[in-house]
Amino acid sequence: MISYLLRLILSLVLVTWVVSSLVFLLIHLVPGDPVAVMLGDWASPADEQALRQQLGLDKPLWQQYVLYFAGLVQFNFGQSLFFQQPVSDLLVERLPMTAYLAVMAMLIAILIAFPLGMWAALRAGQWPDYAAMTIALVGVSIPNFWLGPMLILLFSIALAWLPVSGADQPWAWVLPSLTLGTALAAILARMLRASLLEIFHEDYIRTARAKGLSKARVYGVHALRNALLPVVTILGLQLGTLLGGAVITEVVFDWPGLGQLLVDSIQRRDYPVVQGCILIISVAYITVNALTELVYAGLDPRIRLAQ
Image 1: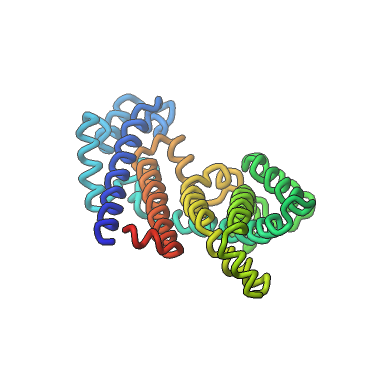
Image 2: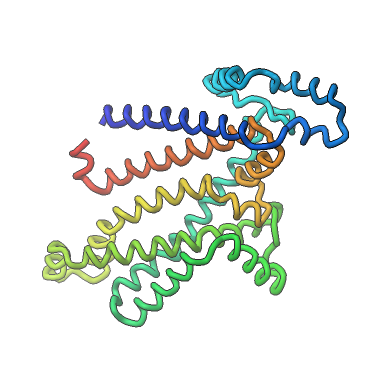
């Protein structure tokens, strides 16, 4: 188990270094000058040169790379070119909002997917099964950039029940969480149905039935516990995706999270902030995947013995 954890930590460090290096190189290859964006079109060449020296952008690329990683080892993400404040302050301010949105979307997905998937599995081949899987198929097919505006038109403009955007009002999280959670719920429902149908034919399920156990115990305890193994994997992967990939939803609903900050920073050519956002997203994704493996090992004793 110790060797497994060491390999996990080593892979975390290696992947983080690779991702950070790629982002550093790619962001510097993107056309556009952050100095020109900050000063505007009417700035003089002397002003641009002075600001470029002040920000350290006049140094060769390899020196900027060395300085960036020297600061990264000390958990220093650098200074924002646009906001003129530490990148770590911006990340600390925005990360909780993205995490909150991801957790709420995950809860909504679980509340929708588990009843839907179990209902479809218990009524396999009947109209409830077809209805549930049709709903799941529609949920998977609808993109966030379309579903979000449709929810705004319905619940914010037509019915005036929920706020359009931002995070200032109490119920502002509902529409973005529902937008993110719908597609995830569809994936989980289909996965849970398929896993349960496979489990229903196992010998221990027939044994549990032969013992006279209630349906709630057979399906809710024995079958569901073992059917959760692939579902947990999907949950972990999707949670990592939600933490880092809610960019479109945050932009649509003007949610003040990492995704919104990342898009704004790319437009401003704010290199340190973009690098910091990508780094946090990659670390969060890898960490969630590692925790998923640990939960998976807790659910399946065979994996613990193999480690």
